[in-house]
Length: 309
Image (cartoon, rainbow, N blue to C red; front, side):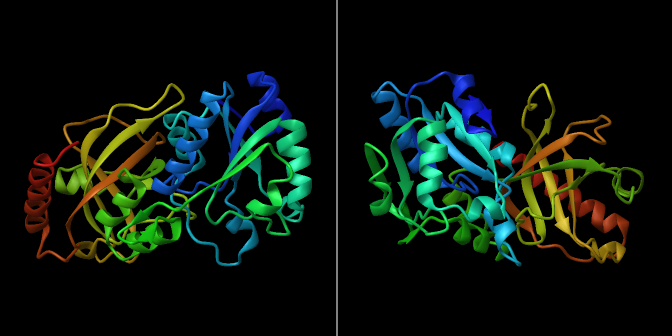
């Protein structure tokens, strides 16, 4: 899959004379986004054109809103999910207030038509473009075809990033995963923690430094899977147990994300790690001493072994 931040560079890199495109934030690449991408790819390939997704980094809300919502996935994850959906090229445009001030017409002419040579455009059911918030009717004058894909409904309501963030925050992980169409996951760098996992408990944990813009699950202990990330690609998924808690047994005051990768040993400080959340194991609580905590951690691992990877 081709990726670039400049539209002309992207088209020169992939060498097409026309394409089918879709535009959006694609935060989470949830079931609704997946349907939009599927329709775009299906149409493009049937017409002998590449399927191109246009998205933005950072998320526009982080630039335009004083209290922006947390994002559901990193840009790297978005690109991975788009590639899995069959997209041929992705334009990741740097988002700024200057870009936000451009009208839909200017964006269509300069980026989509002149630079990318978009012939057909696919958009979401609630899509609006540019400073003038143009919708499907206003965009139809620029392209051979504009298709507005209807909302994907789950439990009687449209799938949306807002709905998924709310489910995560309220501890409804299973619902969030259903709406995403896969397990919710986060990426970050493995950093040094308090040094209690291995030395005190005999259960080493990877402390994950997650960007402050990342949405998170409700604090609890979870059955998870983890994989190492690197320039050469991602490693294999391995069973893990993850605590996103304040460590009340040690009188902790701040939330930490600590993952024990089962049946694994090695120095992974400074490495990238992805953790995907599969199921809630238990709420966090204070234990009467280290032995009680260790017994519970081993029980957590036994329970994790009984679940799929």
